[in-house]
Image 1 (cartoon, rainbow, N blue to C red):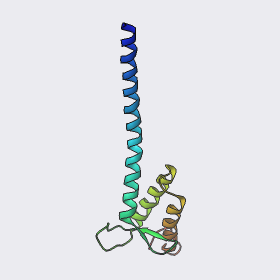
Image 2 (image 1 turned 90 degrees about the horizontal axis):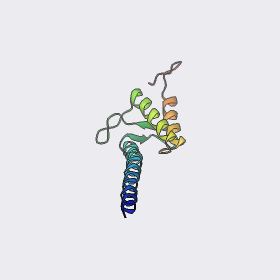
Image 3 (image 1 turned 180 degrees about the horizontal axis):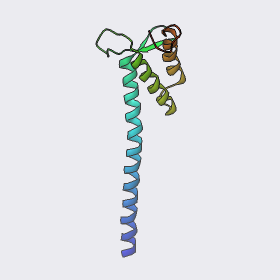
Image 4 (image 1 turned 30 degrees about the horizontal axis):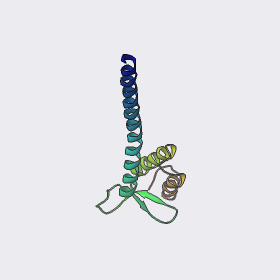
Amino acid sequence: MKVKNLILILGTIIAYLGIIAYVRMSNERTLEERYYHSWREDYIKNKNQNEQYVNAAGRNNPSFALSEAQGYGMLLAAKAGEKHLGSWIDFQKLDNYYLAHRLTNSNLMS
């Protein structure tokens, strides 16, 4: 009887810890995905079919692009691609905008 109770208690503890671990790991992934997609909706603007820029003004203001925002956006798109939250096309469109708006003979954006 004592062995059965011990096994039942041990099984319950292991199941509880397994559920907690699963929820913690899946919750982090869900949060990352939600924040990335929310950021894309609020800050990424289409210039044309092949170019996108990061709206440095935010969602409710007239949009404009800054090189720093574009760079951070490209970094976020690359990191999201590593985690399968975004695609290569997301990064490529941001990069196309950067390449189209560089200063002559420079790596800086105009």
